[in-house]
View 1 (cartoon, helix red, strand yellow):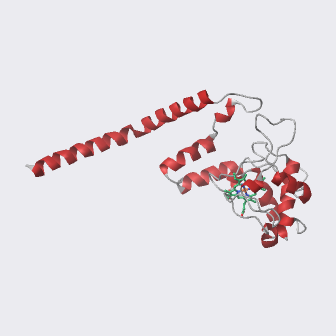
View 2 (cartoon, protein in one colour; view 1 turned 120 degrees about the vertical axis):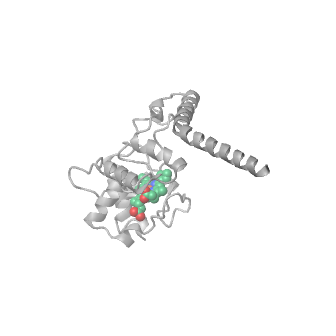
Length: 210
Ligand code: HEC
């Protein structure tokens, strides 16, 4: 009798588990819609910080779901990277290296895109918030890899300049679901600012390469 009960309970459990699995996608979509409602209701539009920022593009939506599902499958990641590669825009004049001194200021500045910032003024890149870049600056975040001696180790050739420009323009064109902002793609930084950052990373005279 206890055996039979166990079997019955187990079968019921399996049936429930089956049901739960079948209901999961719909439940997921409902939860997502509710979460979006709550977030939308709790944010106020102010200045340049509009509610349009809650709209996710294809990449953001796929990457937001990824943690719940586990890492993106290889094929999906390759597809995302290929789609983001197609968005890359290089300077029309082919010049990829600017002024590393300006690049250092851009890397240090966390100003921009907040409601309290003047949208007419240029934004910073806030690179130090996630990367070590120079020996002198000891206050840096570690969410991203250290970029200290980046150019010294990897060289300053044309291919390296193109990769570095494109990586800052749109990191997801190389790494699916990267947490680094898409600085050019989202017009956070201008073409000239990205060039200055390429120089900061690659110029042998820059503090990054000492
Ligand atoms: C919110 C954190 C964050 C910020 C801000 C950020 N990055 Fe990154 N960065 C990352 C992460 C994480 C990676 C590693 C994943 C990847 O490659 O996308 C990375 C990778 C990179 C790489 C590739 C390194 C390699 O070995 O190829 C470069 C170059 C880079 N960042 C430059 C910059 C510059 C320049 C800025 C400022 C304009 C910046 N990052 C701002 C998080 C950030």
